Length: 239
Image 1: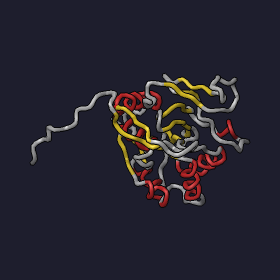
Image 2 (image 1 turned 135 degrees about the vertical axis):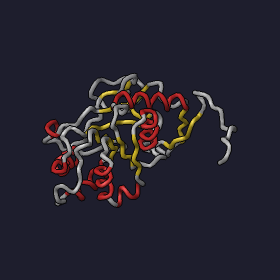
Image 3 (image 1 turned 30 degrees about the horizontal axis):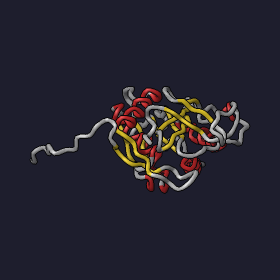
Image 4 (image 1 turned 30 degrees about the vertical axis):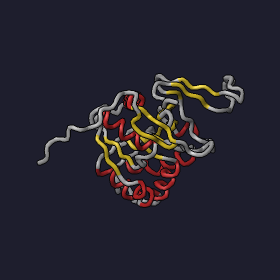
């Protein structure tokens, strides 16, 4: 019954939209400024790469909204128009049965996950009676935020199969607060890592992204070398 508030803030495409903390992997966390323009560009790249604009998509998001992965999932879904189901991070980590129930009840098609979260689901699925949950609607489980052991991924596919989970739902991604998504693996196939005890690959760069590995002198290293990763795209934070 109140009149619309007409005193909203008028921003600009290259104005700061929010500040995100970096991961702190290589030092103390730093505040990263993201602009409206590069956030929207990142959303459109993710929509195109994930087919999130298709009808019937429902995404379960349990990652915190002050984390790059959780925030970008929520913004990308707003851009795509997909249905969102949110659950508190603490609830997801402390009550995996509730997450499995929500995946089944809301006929969720997409969900983000970490290696640690997959491990928790594996523990809950172990010995669970078949038919308790319907995971047949899941089309994509995107692994993000940390390296994921191939053994944990294989175990999840095996334990969730009796509940209708398809064998090709797992994909991995790589990103950061400074640039959102950088690379994505289309699908993880258990047979590709049947005897691997290593970590899942993160795939190839997303469209419009350039990635290289450099040495201490800043020169590009040969393929297969280890070193700092540099990425360039229009969605990288300014500065």
